[in-house]
Every structure is written in structure tokens, then in C-alpha cells.
Length: 402
Image 1 (tube, rainbow, N blue to C red):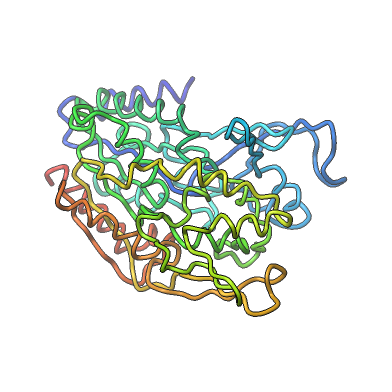
Image 2 (cartoon, helix red, strand yellow):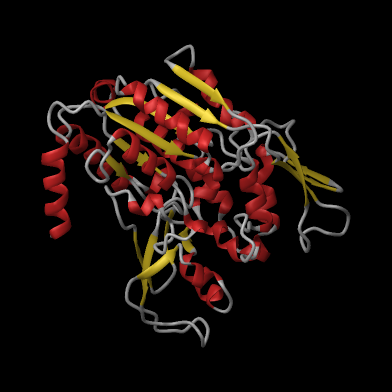
């Protein structure tokens, strides 16, 4: 109650009708939102796991990522897929919620302790607050969501996001909003914008600023499915992230057929090749080992972005390049499926391939696209780089007429 009153007063005092600042809404990417959970199980997972809890931090809490707690964590965060309804749900006995919608804290830091491993939008937000006078939860907002899900299961989120745009517009003197997204957040933003009328976009969105947009997916998603990922962490085993195989968002991030065709080999076995067109066969070949439903989730998500049509709002498409990025997996003889494959690298930002990052160039003949191609910046850490922070600051200042 006190927080709501405080935000209202700040809004009234510091964001008057004549404010020159266009408000900002931040849409995070995969892994870019905090998730809270509570557990109420009748059957224990392991003798060291709690069966009944109050709300706790599921993503991200560093203590849970260390053995033996990590074995409980990976069971709590995984999803279940129903092949009849084509929907997912939490693990049995687990309830989740996404904190901080409309605020910025939970997209600035993924770990409430504000540990460096959990830094996300903080450096960008801090710069906008200190140098341009933005006020958190007044004219700069976060729009976190359950990143485990793809856009087809985010109906309520998109309803709330539209309300946030309209409320932010009204509370900031009728100033249209700057939409800033990162990674998969750019896909979420694109899907959202494609779902709105042009009249609505013209009124409520002044500009769309995409950072490292994974527009056409990434070969890294195939690698994550095959062997997991350690998130560039020194203490986290990649095998503990294999729960991502249960996530529709991973299916959504698989290489898009618009940018990967039958000539582009994603997985090479001694006697077989897998491309985007027969990737589901690879999933099925591992199904006994993983219990995957990835082929069904890929079918559910393949048409979400309407053939990558333009968002039809002025935009800045900012991304990095010349950073080693997974392109292909190679299984030497007698290694599949018992051992991890060898990774062949190509151009990109370490996570997203250059062909996906540059998809926005195809929209230049349909709308305004300011394309900025940086070099040697990693997909996630770029959000803390001085080069990107300065670029976002200058972009926002220009929109505000400064």
C-alpha cells in the first residue's frame, strides 16, 4: 500500500503533463525475469528436498544452484506438457508467479541479492535514471513474464502488457512509449506488435529498440537441447539446465525455416544429417533418454511470428557480431547419444547467429529501421558494456529531442 502511494506521488510530482521524456517499457529475454515458487507436495522428490514451502526465489537463487539443492531446483522449475491440450503446466505440487510487473527491479537483477551473476537491465536503467532523469516505476517500467513459455501460452501477459502501455501513456501526459527489448524479448515484442492495430501502435509506441533480437531463432537452442548449457557460469553444470527441454520457449527459439533450409546442417552424425526440416527426428531419437515433447512444442510455436513480418513501428535494431557462436553439432563415431557432440562455431554474438540477428534488415523497405552492428560483444554481457549503454542512452535522448 505504501509503495503504491509513493509511486503515485512520484508520478504526480515528477511526471507532469509537460514532461519531455517518453516513457520506457523493458521486455526481457529468455531467463530475464525472476520467478517465485512455493511447493506443496504429497510425495517427496528426494529426502533432502522440501515438500512444503512458502514463496521462495526459483529463478534466480545462487544457493539453489549448488549441490544438493540443485537436484530439487531442477525438478521444481521444469514443466509438464499435455499432448491433448497442447499446453504446459508446472511440475506437480509447484506453484509459480512472476514478481515485479510494472516495476524495474526484477528485470534489473535476476537475483534479489543483486549479485553480479544476476545483473540484467540494471546498467541501462541506472544510466537513464542518473543522466536523463527517468524515475523507476513512473516513466520506466519492466514487463517480466514466465520465460519458460512461448508466446502461444502468454495470452494474459499480452493483455497486461497492452494495459501497461496504455496506462503508462496516460500517466505520462500522452507521451507514446519507447519499447526496449532483449533477445527473446524481441520476439515477444514483435508478436505483441503484430497483434495490435496500426492505429494503436501509432498512438502508443514511438519507437522499438531491440537489443540482440533472436528474430529467427538460434542454433544454440539445438545445442541446449542436446547437451544443456552452463550459462557461462563457473559453478553450474550444464546438465542441470536440461530442464529447458521441457520449455516451449526453447522450441520457439529453434532455428526458423525462414533462415535455415535443407542445406544448413545443424547436427552431423557419421551416417545421418539433421537440418531444420527433419529436426524433429533428432528429438525423437533422444526421446527414450529425455522424455521430450520438443517436436510437439515446435509445431505449436512455428507460426507465431507470421513469417517474421515487420512490426510496423520505427525501430533500432542493435546487435553484436564476430563473436564465436554455435552453428553445428558434430557427433564423432560411436558417441551418439551417450556423449556430448563437438560444436562448430560461426559468426554471431555468442548465442544468436548473425543470420537471425540481421533479419531486421529485411524490414527496411517497409518501415524505418536503424541498424547498428557492433563487434565482439557477448549476447548477455553486452547489456553492461559501456558501448551499448551509451548507444541506448543516445537513442533515448534523441527520441526525447535532447
